[in-house]
Length: 206
Image (tube, rainbow, N blue to C red; front, side, top):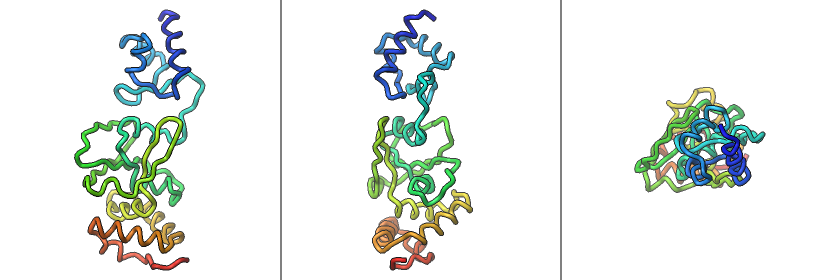
């Protein structure tokens, strides 16, 4: 390709965090054909249609790139269940699939370049217990500790047994009164308090 194409890409790199959309590339004077050529040459790594990572800047992807990329594709998505428990430190092995919560009414396509497990939540309960994590790239959302553990209990059949057991055991070690109250309140709203009652979650500090 002509040098001017690479020069335009360098201009893009200076004003980008590393992630760039097709719209921004077109605004810088690149054509769809040139974008395709840059992708073939390894300058652009396709995340999903319309979103790329600038591959040859010398900048590594952030460690939490999966969470960031999910949020770039769907800002309303929330990291949930065992994936959120991993972020909260209850397990030390990252689950093979990233668990994502979206509203039942959400029509975003989320065909990510890594494995995901999508859970659809009733709109009325979706926005509760959310924590927002700020990054230089984009903010992403995860459910808090108690809701994440509760959802693991709800989705038990979809979770690796070893990971599930580790989540329950480690949560039992670190819970406190406030944590348990939040878990029970969430379980009651979601109508699965009977499942929670089977566990030795005593309402006392350890």
